[in-house]
Length: 155
Image (cartoon, rainbow, N blue to C red; front, side, top):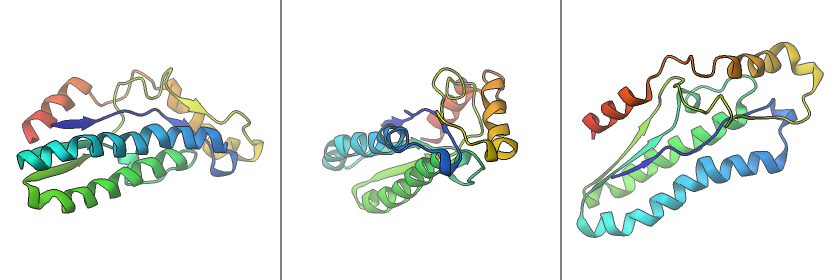
């Protein structure tokens, strides 16, 4: 079994997003998933068994203001998961995407990155969300330990 759960948050309005920061986030959030999947597929295919779990987010189903790049990374993992599942089913494998609500992880804490040069015009919309997300760090409703048990039970 492989569980892909690496990533960090990046908040910015689309216009504020800095190319290097967006690309770095995609390297972890999307290409990290791609690389680990490609690393385990030969062995799983050979043993004709395996399960890959890609942890995305409810943010991979709904794009919210100020987190479009974060959502884009999660949407990409959703599509990759669906395609991977269809490609590997004949090898006795399964790929599952898990889309949790906000969890009490470090995503909204010290791991969170935000636009370095916020644009004042977005302050009332995206900017308001950007301030609220870190303020809620550690108070999210999702419990990582219970989620892990649920994933194990599902697999």
